[in-house]
Image 1 (cartoon, rainbow, N blue to C red):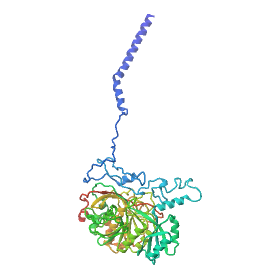
Image 2 (cartoon, one colour):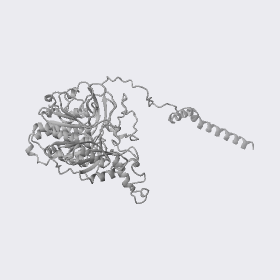
Image 3 (cartoon, one colour):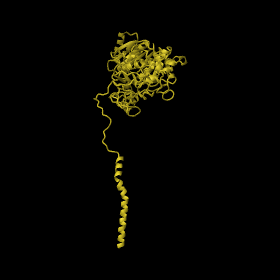
Image 4 (spheres, helix red, strand yellow):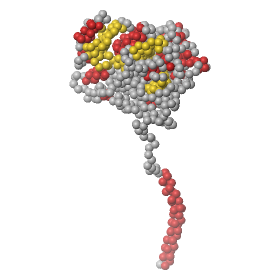
Length: 576
């Protein structure tokens, strides 16, 4: 028993020594292992956000005299559409990673610059409105089918009416009627004659009438159309430009000059003795960039408004010749004010635009620039056909309603050269319309142009793309005055640089316009297959849809004059 007890005690001691030896290394490294685990664990730190909170009442402390490039990009704008149409609030657009944040708020968008509204606010042509025009359960859903009255037709009619001036009708009346007889015609139908005049362009007399009671527009329209003294009646449709309010400084890099190869083209021609009519908002003819360029002006509105940023920018894209370079710096302009201030930006109507077309055609315009868009309008379509029959070239903006928009007019008219927009990298301007009616593309994103009162602006929109092409067409007509509108279209498309998908496409048409190549080809126009004034190349088709949208332009006016232009070199140096 004693021996067994000693053996048990001996074995117990040995087991304790072995166990101690095994645990000793773990005890030695234990604290380090715990520390490492603490590092690997995600720390629970209460660190505040690094995103600065900006009070809307704090005035930006950036000097307006600093000519720094604003951290703004058109493609960034397009990817962040306003969340609520019609009640846009100013927010900051900041390029990620930029050292200095831009203090430039969003420009005010028109309702259809980006078609990002809900179904209930969308019209039958895809246009966004600021109030419901369709049943929330409409479309192909069953909830919209209530009764046999056809609520869809009523909603479509309401959407159309929102695109026209309330209680106004435009009618062609018997030209033999005196003013007194025209007033009597209006009274017979419960109307007030606002204006009427003979339009030589149409060979007829057009009157503008207002409904003085609360009768439905469709009822009055049918009754007036049945009168023996009336040839036709339609709504007085609206057209929109952009109300531009924001301002900042920016650099003066004119990438459009390089993309269009303007210096090389200007070594040959500069648009001398070619007359371009601009149907737009007011133009600041006293701006140094436009000095001695506005040969004539006409106010189709009869208003007392001053110059506007859009019209002044359009004129600058064509004829700027001081610090900036327009596409045809020696062309003559007819500045036609057809757009005035409205609740949704500068706007016009069928009747006023027709007055502008008529004046341009009657006063020697060889090219008419139309940087606006709207619905398919029978009266304007008729005016465009008559203008084309006179051999006058027409250029229009494709529109800024984006990829999902139907074709817009007048760009979608087969007599008109439709122009889409590109950016500095020759990518499609994000808001630009697409379609098989697009002829060519030209710079339209963040272009540097004049603004009223000797200021400058950086602005975006297919409006300005169209203006550049109107100037290029002026260069071609100086080079070869015998060119017809169909010839100009054929040369522009044939000499364009292919962009995007190889070959013709719905984004860029034939490609990016090349002024130098077009001017060079214009001298040998006999090699270009002649086309009728209203004809399109085989690849272009007239669209089948009726549109409803705006060609508003995103713009920001600059308070300070631009620094000297790096691109403003002599044609000889730039052509090397």
